[in-house]
Length: 249
Image 1 (cartoon, helix red, strand yellow):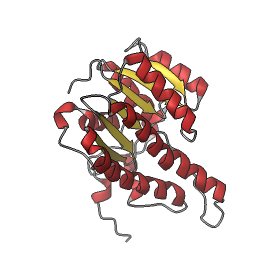
Image 2 (cartoon, rainbow, N blue to C red; image 1 turned 60 degrees about the vertical axis):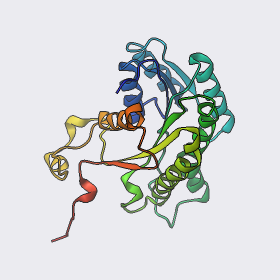
Image 3 (cartoon, rainbow, N blue to C red; image 1 turned 180 degrees about the vertical axis):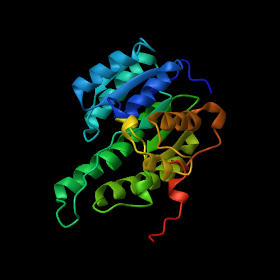
């Protein structure tokens, strides 16, 4: 899988999984554009990733704002002459009882997670369509599209919507040689991995909690030119957790 010279946009890239995805693409020679609403964190992350890829750029972007998205795509295209890959990673959660969740809080989660993914995909597709090679889009969903803890309705709905959006876009954009897939991460520890307990690792069939780099590797797989027969799919990356039956004693 070769990404040298490819232009990759990662949203929600200032921290967490998005930061790792951006860094891993940079390490293998891609031109990486980081988009995030957190300006200070974004500047710090861009400075870090420039160690691997000096041409890395960052663009403050609110994915709720269509004009921000258009500006970000335009800058990426003007900087590198093309856009090959989009990783739709920007997302938020609101853990709150459905009795108390406000309409404004619900709308904010849907706008960032679901509408933002659609708008970014639409705008990048306009550019990819003009390229003979097309492009690849990966939407970051979640295993919470299929299973839930209490008080996560807005997040679960948005992530379920992303999976449906993925297969719909795959069909609509296929004739323009644009592939669209999604990844559903399970427990990916983005903060203090060393503080995890044995029981945290042992509940995973593979014997450990996930690293952000596990999601980056999945992005590599789904965006590699060699895997151009894969589109409209959702890849669950959760160490087998969603396949494990759990019965209360």
